[in-house]
Image (tube, rainbow, N blue to C red; front, side):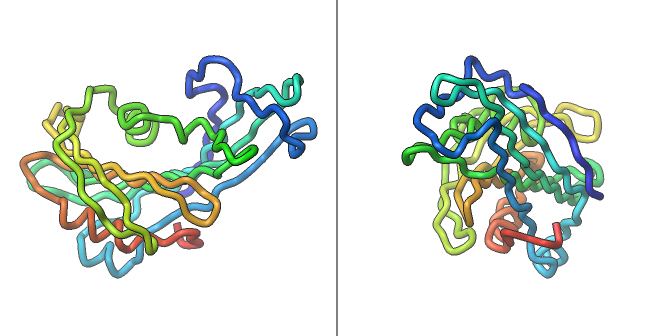
Length: 208
């Protein structure tokens, strides 16, 4: 399933992004990310299925050389789900979010790059509960070693509040910023499966 959603100022950013000295902006600036996916064989092995692919349009007014310009980003969010225990068909979920890297004078100015774990989780996977960090580990993704943080939180799963585990890692590839987020009930450990999915990420992907 492919969906498109426009996000106009939905990030609640304070002020405008500074692009002073950027010669790339002429009236407006548009950049698009490529969607990411997971190898089909790994999804089958781990019991996950593709649920949705969503195109997210983000528009923000920025200041460039003393003038207002429009920054327009095309992002992608791909979701995979898996039944886990008695918690429902999508008790375990794996999200892949991609957004274009936008640099000016060597500085990354894509607002998503500055998001903390709670803000990123809320925007990508929903939920407003606080995160209690439990630790971190290194997982290989697309040939790079990526640090994944592990959190404990409360999430709505099958219409009930459940203590859950969240795995979150951020990295760059092929001109995009990517975030991989895995969630599952704390009572059912899917860490091994999440790591396997991370190791089988494809980007850019035409099958998302």
